[in-house]
Amino acid sequence: MNKVPLTVAGANKLRAELEELKTVVRPRIIQAISDARAHGDLKENAEYHAAREQQSFAEGRIAEIESKLSNANIIDVTKADANGKVIFGATVKIEDLDSGKEVTYQIVGEDEANIKEGRISVGSPIARALIGKEVEDVVTVKAPGGNIEYEIIAVDYI
Image (cartoon, rainbow, N blue to C red):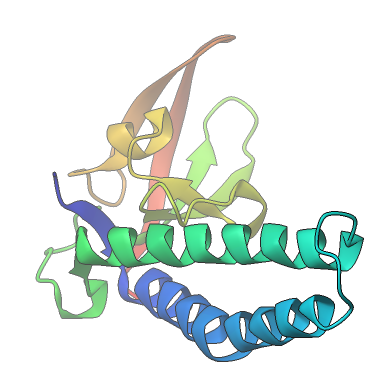
């Protein structure tokens, strides 16, 4: 399987979720199943079935996170020598040349992307246009509504 890029912060967030699932959620579900079994007949025991469903979900998520972490290529952008170029993990401030609107994005892995938090996937059209460029470069992004030109104002490796 191909290695998937992941920032250090993204990897830490996944590890924290995995730890929570294994040390808090899993034991709580096991206790709920045990308590429900104590009530007797399992065929018509809604608490038992609900707890088993929660267990299935939690175990699936644990497996998913472990798989993501094992296939991750964790990149620490603070240690990268990019010479001012936009790379994976960089935070880029850009200006729309038509509207003058400025936005800041961090280029992250697909699992970390959240546009509301200013994190875009490395596979997104904007990120693909920005990768390898420098401050003052103008990039053209092909959007559904037509091409949009952005100027790179700043590149940070936080």
